[in-house]
Length: 326
Image 1 (cartoon, rainbow, N blue to C red):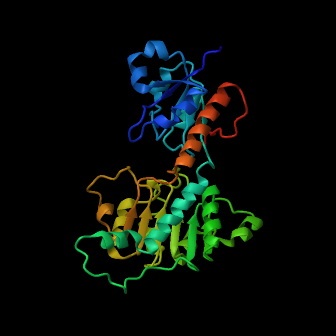
Image 2: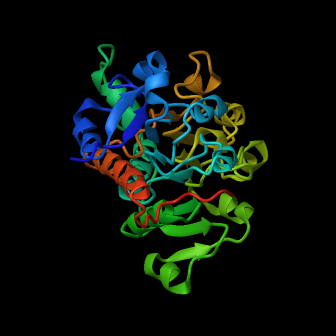
Image 3: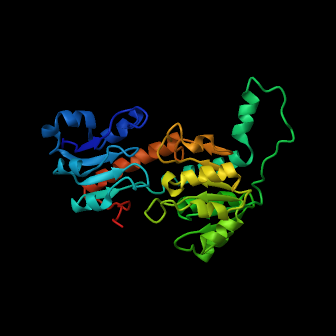
């Protein structure tokens, strides 16, 4: 029986390590070498490793690691975002990079809607008040905001953004979107979306602004002080993309000054935030720890797709999820 190829991975279990329950998925196609074992026996394992399987940004792929792996052929990323990988550097070694776009679209869209509802209807604050031992009376004149028939502005109408629009349509929301490339008329009509060629227009008209872009040099700090000032003072900002897309200091200032009403973020930079970061004490904010695709079914699918991509590339089979160098 032919020996399975070797794959390098970060570590097993823990807060960011590869889940033990998914190891059997990897072992169908690879022999696993974790970083600790690799570091102790580089001379033995370095020539054997043909794949790196990246999970939660680990292991860090830098020049030193690439130089140490003469037979590395593929880096398979667990997730769609690859902003943590130096694609130009990796391509110089002739190594292919794959990712898992589409696998977590529905789950991430669900998270975006969850944050919007939780913020609009004061779910977190209401839970705190209801559970607090100090609560003697509930203020029944405490109200939130309507989702139904409100205006949702989606910045980034890729596959996840479109999934959000499909959900928003069910709540009769007016949907605006800004994207590098306009969707077809048929796609717009299917969800009732209106294209805004200028992001300023979307910011000024939306009750809820949801950011769903890929992190690139162009989208770094896409939402800063000027953009926040364009939003309605009654508006809510939701981010399910990457923390660096928003100027977090500007956002904390905008919340505390009432420039916008609220924010709900599933992503920050760094993750978690330093415990003295101004966002942690800002008014009307919900923070969750990158829960976008955090469901059992979706995470398992991500693991399966990551491993399958790497295996197929080594076998010379066609793989559609190859990441190209920008």
